[in-house]
Amino acid sequence: RPAPATRPVAQVFTPPTAISQSLPRWVPPDNATARREFSGAVRVLIDATGAVTDAMMVRPVFPTYDRLVLEAARSWRYRPATRDGAAVTGEVVVEIRLRPLGG
Image (tube, rainbow, N blue to C red; front, top):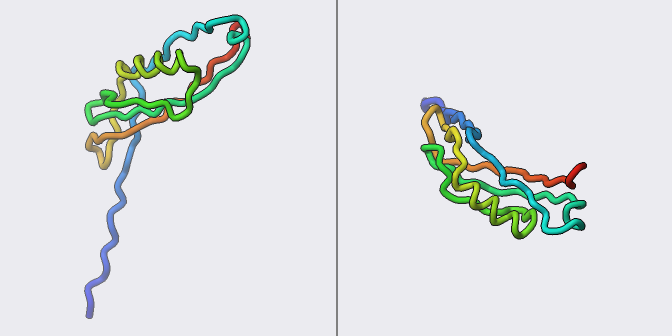
């Protein structure tokens, strides 16, 4: 009689969590821009120590602001992702919304 089939053990994955994730200050270049809302997102790759190894805009916000976000992302810190309790690489997508000044 064949041995019973074994099921693969489910792995428990916990995504990275932010420790330090400050967005740069939004300084609109003119009054018309200051009255508009902008949104976008940046994908951040995080190594097993919680350091950011790469960042890319997946939805651009505003050209000059996107560059500031990518620069700032290099200094962000995270609790690394874990798989079955062991630190592993992971990624997060950070949503960004810039609201009109005074609004």
